Length: 335
Image 1 (cartoon, helix red, strand yellow):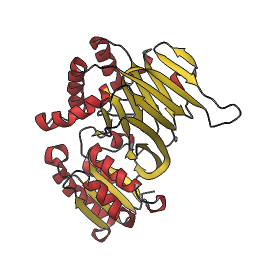
Image 2: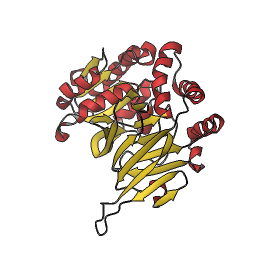
Image 3: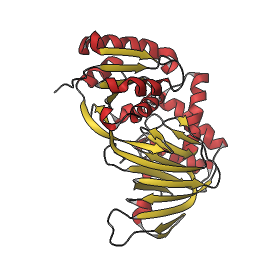
Image 4: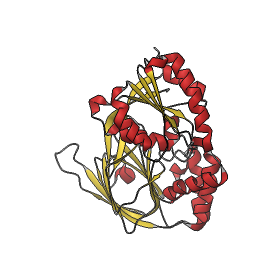
């Protein structure tokens, strides 16, 4: 049954895809106006960083549906605004992808054609989605450290310089970072309620030290502490980032857990490049120094500050308190 979008707020980034967002927003506004009625549609263009957060928080509670048009950046900002609202006041959230990576939109099954995405929203089903949180800042899809974060942050400047988009952009940035910034970071992570944490075994697992802190007779209170040296670590709500790299291929937005992928080292540049490229189709999962875990909360520290990003936005801290907000946001999914 088609969704009833009801009173709808469309938040659009006109600068998405090097200015193509403005035309995409015009098309989306016209089509949505036909579906929901001009009197039920409010349209706002962002004009500075953080603007979508302010709009979603300041106005979102008055709408049944809030839509973000742009890339993962405007998704990140809009989600942060909506999550500041009381849970009962949060509207349904939908995405019209007009960006470079479009990973959260991909997780929701949204087409990169604006007219098709609008039709999908009309026919979408509502899903109660998890939202990640790191040191009080929310993330819709991805939090990462080390090499992957360096790539994600580099793509922002590279996109401005070259106009490249999507997978090509991330591949070029990835190769450059692999050649020049293949650093190792020593980490310690305490995982609460873990699942498949480094194969779920205590002791020493090759290049990772795993200490089990299970509380006997207290279901749901288990924990693991992991220690090792990594080139990268990703904490995912959904399965992909970097324009479709399936870094945590089994991640789901509605399971109440965060999926973790981390690559231990040292690795040579050639080895790291091969494994990086393998992640496009989730073939990296077979390598022994690529580890996976799931948890509800993570307390994470490194021996020095690694590059860090949330949904493509930089994050600077000395320690990271990471948690999942289960079923926190109603989203419109085409899947």
